[in-house]
Image (tube, rainbow, N blue to C red):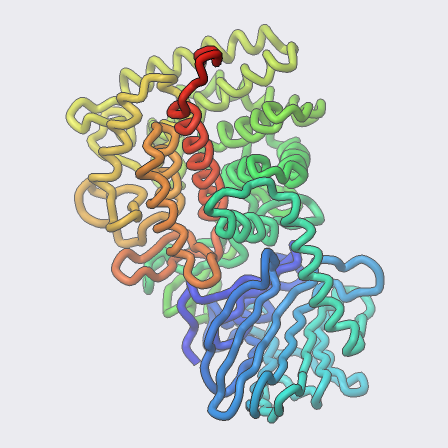
Length: 606
């Protein structure tokens, strides 16, 4: 069985780990007991030795979707002589007498007769190791030391691990299978009723969560799916958001641009927390700041590029040998060496998250403000230094203009918070002075007359799609001439067809050997909306959303030639920038309506 296209995988999750389910019903990725642990189903990156868990109908998939405003997946199948529906869920509520983690898969024959295929083949790690198996009555227990994975089947016998089993179902017949985790604790066995209740509770839990989302604009469906995805990728025990639940899905098929994204990037998390806040979900943003305040205590005033889910520094990057990789893309890596880089833009995103929270009227607690204050102090001292840049280039540090833009954000927003709090006003004076010096330097050294745009690096003739952040940074204030010129230059030089953009061109001219970067697409839409071009931003938003296909899930990149997703999947950064762009379009539309609405004779101007 070939590995499925990256963009065809569905995401299930319980805010501690996540499963990727192919369109043909196979769970090809699931790490136990959490995102950054070894996979028990690792077929996604090792077709030779990785485990997988198939529940499928002989026939073809007619449709696949998430149930209304939830993370419960529904797949409709058509076989030669009947139809069936498969419901997949991972319960988020594990309080009380529940398994630590469970994948619940329920099948119902809706007409005629269908043949159900079940293959349960767990193998822990990469390369995958087969378990020691035993029976507890009808239930199968697979063990690797203190970790156990239990399979229960209701409606038929439990199959042997790694052995395909086929079951004939007639109209109205049901079959439920539950795979549950016991990690250094007793296994919790369920009844058939328990299993169905878990699906119903999971759907209700998600709908209650979504009910607090305040956005009701034309892109609500995509915004809701993105916020659910961001929530699924947040490790609830600590509040740490992972960049993606996978490792080493290629940015270039068959190439070596394969990285481990199962860590928390403060940059990505800061953008995500801003998306949550703008949509009315403040609790998630507050949890992120609390986690980051604890995680950064040992490194302040420096901010690491990434942290583990527990808030410790990232591990040493290594290559995993003896496995096939996704589509033959090697190496497969564990951990990420970007942890050792200095990336100046990180500080801006974190401080900006604090400013968003304060601007909504929520008081920053003492530890959070001390963290933000320390970050602003660091930027005030170090903004003149070169850095690795937002794209984590593994070369010598350089004077990246996009890094300076976010350094400006750090100083500007920290000063705003201080003025709102009426505290640390002397510090705010220093931040304001350094902010103004930074602005002057960027306007002088970052602008390229030949390009009629800001350039990627001081003195270079290259462009970078991260320059689109000039709009959100507010470095140019109300003067939009250079902002619009930069946006136009990026679109012309880095366009990859339609709404797609490359993040940069390595030699300045040739198309890169990677896909178009989706976050850049949403930064473009955001910049257009902020510049008042809502009539152009809105249709581009619709086009970008359609890239997510039937499930609305986005990877890191898109192959412009095929429309297929590339990179680790799904990608938190792509979904958080989608939400931000949708909200910017809505704000721009409201602003345009106010400007164009006629005043009554007694209505004052302004």
